[in-house]
Image (cartoon, rainbow, N blue to C red):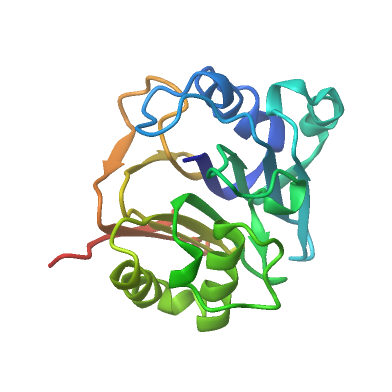
Amino acid sequence: MCRHLAWLGAPRSVSSLVLDPPAGLLHQSYAPRRQKRGVVNADGWGVGFHDADGAVRRWRSARPLWGDASFASLAPVLASGSVLAAVRSATVGMPMDESAAAPFTDGAWLLSHNGRVDRSALPASRDAESTCDSAQLAAHVFDRGADHVVDTVREVARRDPDAYLNLLLTDGQRVLGLTWGDELSYLVEPDGVVVASEPWDDDPRWTDVPDHHLIEVTRGVDGPARITVTDLES
């Protein structure tokens, strides 16, 4: 299992989202507070964001997040209003190179997978960035289209009932978060919304998204973001 977060709102530095929060992704890489499976997330990390022109930019590594001083030195000057970041706890038998670290992309969307899935439940894809289960799942979601992510996850879950298929996606205008085997939490700030595997601090405003739900955050136009949480079992 892994830990991940997505930010949608006014531009913030990557450091303020990933490294600085007291229980943020840096802390979760070695001492997650809510992780149900696995102890540490030391098998790599990745940060993706949309730049001022809407293009996807990424920085991924197979090293533990706490050991990458070059990222720590540049993260304070990297800023975006659409960020997706993850720290990785690799599924046994999966590759350990940076191409297996989320976020994955199709050039418009960024996607992170927290969980595991039998690769035999997924169609083979030449577009997958790695042979790991998460990359294969991402390629399948991209092939079907992000708007069909719920149906895609349901189909994969039918093929592999033991799969954990918790996803975060963003295209710079929306964040989609799907809980399937785990939970998410979100926090509404004056300048945007963060959706994460677990709260990055003890602020009581954090709201939990239960298992088998979809959260959609849509960027506001001259106003606050719109948040919709849908029960996938109803």
